[in-house]
Image 1 (tube, rainbow, N blue to C red):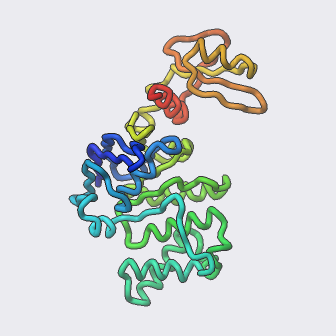
Image 2: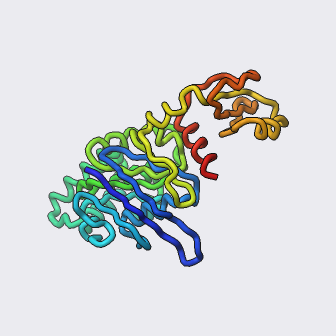
Image 3: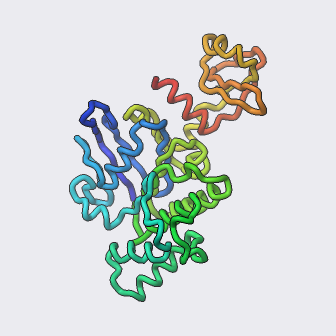
Length: 290
């Protein structure tokens, strides 16, 4: 099972190039699409989800021409957008029952069983009579996944799914996504590096509408092995280090400033070799693209 994207481009009426000749192969499992805000992630997700038109290019999934056979795509697609709208005064059970009916499940008993199965799967069965307007952010996201799973989709898109979640809900949501992604294609579009690091075997980085990296996640990390160095510095020394070294990121920890640089040899000057992470991969390739 594979989603193929070939030479996809999209320019908005105001001249903003959202996608510039994007090509990707997305296999079964969880695939991470990383990029800063405004990089083109949501535009790409909306085009795959048949909610927006591309200017040029092709997308195919299991013999379906995604750009031309939209009704066929919708039969195999589950989509959780970044801003998932819902009726705050309705209950989770009633709304999911309504969505299930819209998906073509007309038989009342069959629909009841399906709604129960989905709510239990996302751990919302006990809250089934609760109004959605009272749901926490995490509960809303889990409800969004439940509606995305109606019809047993083979292609699932989740756009910025953990933004605004507390740590406990984020872990719960990660476990749910991991379970879902075992046998279907799941695209996780996010600017949160840890989501990709924790979940995805394969990843891509998009910036200013261009794909600047597409790689196996562990492979991308291994390419930086022995080349990432860290050091604590006085905050006022940052400009000097930016000029002298190939700086890829800075962070604050315990009120102290730490910098990470890229160097193929030991830079000495009190730098320590650091095991690279997906965050290092992300910032390294963004620094090369800009």
